[in-house]
Amino acid sequence: MRFESGYTIGMHKFSRRTIFRTAFAFPFAGLLSAQSSEPGLRAYAAKKKLLYGAAAGWPVLRDDADYAKHFAEECNLLVPENVLKMGPVHPEPERYNFEPADYMMEFCKKNDMRMRGHTLVWHSQGWPWLKTTVNATNARKYLEEHIATVAGRYRGQMHSWDVVNEAVEVADGREDGLRKTAWLEFLGPEYLDIAFHAAAAADPQAKLTYNDYGLDYDTPGNEKKRDAVLRLLRGLKDRKAPIHAFGMQAHLDWKAFQNFKAETLRRFFRDVASLGLEIYITELDVGDRDLPDDEAERDKGVAKVYEDYLTVALEEPAVKAVLTWGLTDRYTWLAGRNRRPSGAGARVLPLDREYKRKPAWHAIARAFESRKA
Ligand code: G3I
Image (cartoon, rainbow, N blue to C red):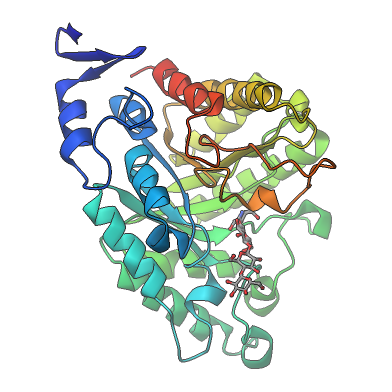
């Protein structure tokens, strides 16, 4: 059915431009999914000048054509789940492994999709050779070389980079709330500035992001962490570090969501935006362990968390992108975590194991629709 400047499909209206771009922009999947008459979440996001994407697994993106097809249909932003982390991409001091990320970058170009890099500096899944090779004297050299090589390879091609990931851990007891990592030990808090300046030199076009988790709820622990993250962001801005965005991981959980208060999230996002930073929801998923085994019940509970959280988050104009940490329940990091006593599989992402759109998918679509253009 036509409306003034486009078409109404299902419950939503799309401009002719969105329809055309979505239908002919990539080879894997045409405009209309085989499973429904509605375009993918990328079209809902694009309609509001947002990006929607997901973490992409490897080698499944190369080897599972079904996964690749649905990924291309639903997403206009891709983040490699693991292959650009310090250890996987730089397994030996003189050796890098760019094959997976190169493939993913080509996949993005073929499918009219952007890519964001994750992550240049992290305390987890780091260089296997760190402890035997790196010390306070040579740490800066190794870190700057790593960032120059990895970020430099995709210069001008990346939407954004998680330059530093999860640098705050209040429980470590430091006054500044910084996590006690090897990088802090070797270089002090200045490692953050070093990383952002090295990333800017390597790729002046990428939006350089600080990414973290555990900030979503109205609890004393999350409040302390929000304060420490804001302090970190303000410090970088005050020292003129080239930071452009904050990544809110948003690993949510149905039971923990009872501590969610809309005004708390609104205030935090207002504080971040007031620093002149964009905000990306970078790793959204909803743990379902404490919901009943019944799939309809679980899907309903998970969908409500997606919609309640995203509707509030998308009120903030500084929020420019939403990514789920995976697209389908077939491949989620939560499959192995908090296993259900019954052994039933996790149902935490927009598509089920057979790539069928779940209530969570529709909840995300409605949240995009709720965004004031
Ligand atoms: O690739 C190796 C494989 O060669 C080896 O045989 C296998 C068994 O040891 O391990 C494989 O590496 C695993 C990797 O995922 C790829 O599957 C690592 O052991 C495993 O620790 C790693 O887990 C990832 C985790 O980060 C740690 O890097 C998860 O997939 C990934 O979803 C998770 O994502 C993180 C974000 O990067 C940061 N925010 C939190 C989020 C969830 O923890």
